[in-house]
Structures are given as structure tokens and as C-alpha cells.
Image (cartoon, rainbow, N blue to C red):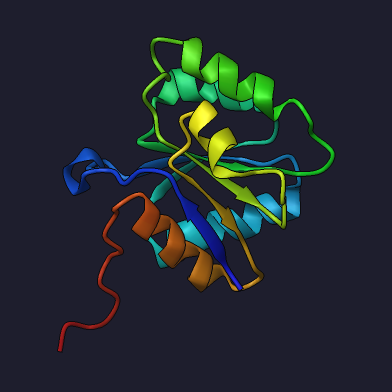
Length: 147
């Protein structure tokens, strides 16, 4: 089941190019999230396998949003978020934090790092995609043959 914490909504017009930077250091998780976002949401997704690479890609690509998928093996995410917010190129990029049951991640911490929200994600990629598009006010592409 998905548990979503929303801090602030984005105006629907704020997201037009629909580019996402996905940061996760676990290749299998990163690939599942990537496929979910590209297949179910029709988003252009840039991938980074580390926080350092993620910061570099964020500055280089300037995506519309960043999905930071936290893992227990990478504890420098607070430093990453601080650096992200001090870079002129990245300080206003919305961040959604994806986590699996991080009880410490409350609204105060989300506010501290200007995160749009956090999603406690389950195994169902389509549910995750729907939550991400809602949180970022993106419209999922119509799927079907049009008849």
C-alpha cells in the first residue's frame, strides 16, 4: 500500500517538459522505477546511481522534478538535499522522496529540504506511477487506440 505525504502542490502549468531525474543506488530498483515512469507515465527519465552523480545530472539536465529513492545503504541524502538547495541551477527543482517505511521522514523534515512530498512505495509500479504524477501535477498520457 502506498503512503503519501504531501507538503505542497505544484501548479499544473509548472510541469511541461515532463523530465524526471531518478536517483537510486540499487540497479534493480532503479530499473523498475525507470520502466514504471517511462511506460506508465510517459516521462523522460534521466537516471543516476549515486547521490554525487545525481547532483551532477541535476545541474546538467535541470529536470522538472527529482525522485530520490532512499536506500538504507546511502546515508548522505541530507547532505545531497542541502547541496541541491544551494546550487542556483537546482534550488527550485521539486523533489519527491521515495522510501520504504522510513518513519523518521515527517513533514518537518520534508519542509526542511523543500521536498514536495514523500511516497512510501509498494511493489506495484502502476500505483507508484499514479501517485508520482498526482503529487507533481503531471498528466499521465492516454493509453489506448483512440476508438
